[in-house]
Image (tube, rainbow, N blue to C red; front, side):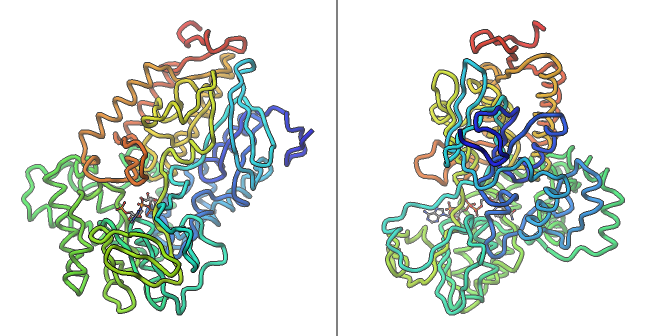
Length: 557
Ligand code: NAP
């Protein structure tokens, strides 16, 4: 009989299996363990951290301000921890999560270096059987994914990709020991949030940095700075209020907006408030107006987009390079807005940094010595893929989930993900997806969205225990309505005007459908709370003896 890491027999049931030991998995473990469940977390890496374990590229930093990019559930945690800068850098976030894992004694329930290769639902026992790459198998009542929304790296399948004889790295799988760029010709593909951070950090550290850009982006200054003691004291003194406002906001950030909409304001007034917010930096700029209005009012959006375009032109010396860096193909915010930490646009004024427009002259192939576009060949020693992720669904589908009757999640989501509240998907009982598709997730400050999901799931399991249920499943009707609702909200916004990972447009062949819930964290929280209050309205609950066919709704309890 195989023995797992805790020394138990491999066929031992646990109450809950959680996949992933990042922000979500750690809190889910803590919450369920406190409710008396036997929980096992499986983590592919050899440490906790999730996103912040894997994304160690130079310049990696979070765009949410540090005092709100952390857990809010335990006052002692933010009383004891102190962030050093306005925006936290990757090593500091990783250190924070390691500290939380130790502080809450979480490691004893985490099995590291365990990659899940399949999860299969056994109808006869109403349990999930989860299998690891090393053959270990565990059966569980609840199967909870905490795999993150941006965790399966995407690397374009360029012709000749494997012929490159230099070093290549994807930013999301960066070597722990780092990469030496000195005296090297470095090429980087991608100018999303990651590429922008990487380029600003590495420009000037390599003999030459060549940036291969397909679509320019709107980078807003973050205005990072050290967090002074008095600012920290003010934050600590007001934490309760900060968290309350964050939970009640659209983006999970406690920032006031100057105006609800731009209605009635002159163009000059709008530009004045934009300039104020530009000076404040970061997501406060997106909050100049109620964020929903910038993302749904095309005229206002064009004013904001043009404001940023002018800023870009001011910063770049060479007019031709400036025009290549100015985005005109999509409205601001229709793609995830990136932040500029280190004079991104000014980096292109350096002699040792050059920009190649691979929209105008596409990459033809990777060669042994570099990259060939339709125009030219670029000699490279190091090639960096800052090319993003198979977002939102990639990591979930990689788990190879098979529900009752042998139907796989991949089959079910063939035409795009379908969920109820982003928490469960019909046909897959007792499978909870933290920050799953059609929940606010990536459109918010992630820890806020994560905490809400974890707490909802823990409450739901507590409710099931209290009422003698052991099986829960989203009903098909409620799922259909939720998917329709999410799509409708997205269609009324400007998201469809960009080829973004929000819509799966970055991965060739992927079904294009807007995936996060765009109605705001505040509204979403209310909907989830009402569903729970109404005895899990829209879910079907079943008792131990019930099979898939005789799941009973809560109404007959
Ligand atoms: P991304 O936004 O998807 O950007 C990928 C980049 O690679 C884009 O510029 C894309 O060009 C380019 N690309 C992809 N395939 C290509 C091809 N075949 N040829 C040429 N260029 C290609 O990925 P990301 O920058 O890793 O960011 C993903 C998300 O992670 C962010 O939006 C954000 O939510 C999160 N993130 C957050 C932070 C932070 O908080 N500071 C930092 C990094 C990432 P196109 O635009 O033309 O597709």
